[in-house]
Length: 477
View: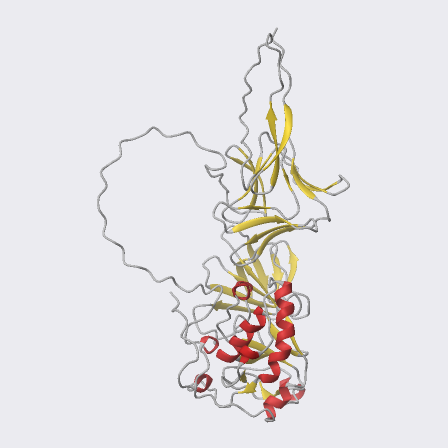
């Protein structure tokens, strides 16, 4: 009888930061034959987890197309997010020092520092692989079978050949290629999910050389200094989520009017802290968006909202909106990706207090708060445009990189008063980097005193008219 010794497991570290077990045969005596080891299980590879492998703090798995990434943070939490938009697809709370293991038998577990299992997907399969799907799902599969995925999917996910290679096809003769005409170059269309609205929208029109500014002691400009400048992001701001065709169709009901809409809403959708609970959900087509006010989850794929607005991000955003000013809340919102790129090419939305606001909206605002006639006691109408005059040399200011981007935006485009706030506030979407947001707050307090009210901003003389300080944005496809 031939005896075979079991292989020894040796840890190897992959380029993507995964730790996997690789089997090496033990030594046998020259007189004892050794049988060749065979296995049908996938080999360790970058951006996938095989049985016996681990994901440690600071490491990640990336989808083949590079769009989605699963990261294990230093606090032990797992986050699956879109690398382009910053939007989170799935989050699993963790514990400092935790690591993610794919155990023999297919179970994926989040293990605390003390060795206790804090979360598991309870899969039972042979030769499992964990990876990130191109459409934004964390997947556990064996062969061509998907055993588990997060978040939940309403469509069938398939395993690509790179994860479960298909048999090599029989070679066929290569046909003689037929020459094709050189295609006409295509100018990339502007991504309205990130930089919304038409190029001629007031939010996308830069300041003109004909702009007239109030003096520092003018009624509106002086009143702006009444409150402390801040930036709302994780609190009292707008949470933006990006739906895919795999996200469930949810029912959103306005309890006050009975309005009901059926719209795709990712299951991880949640508003920022505060009573406004503004949530924006961009649909899979990339240009249809829904604006919700006081959005509240009341069950699986069931929501309520006291203001529901369907928005086409290819228009000017002036027809309707869930803000008090009656225009889209996507107008003037600082987006995560543009802040990362330090390039803000639109006006900013500015919130000020009742003590600063004056009843009677001006263009481009359409409306004001319902109690504005009695609550407002200031000198600044809803819709007023403020900007830093071009005569101010902002390059001489001691600003962070984020502050320089903000200064450029306030000088080239300005900020419209579009919302009532407890203090003088700008708005960044909920996924904005906290460090970058903190830099903006600090530098916003330096830049705010430089703002002046623009006195000749109208629908027929946008931003004062004249030669524009910045070129027009690319057209929307």
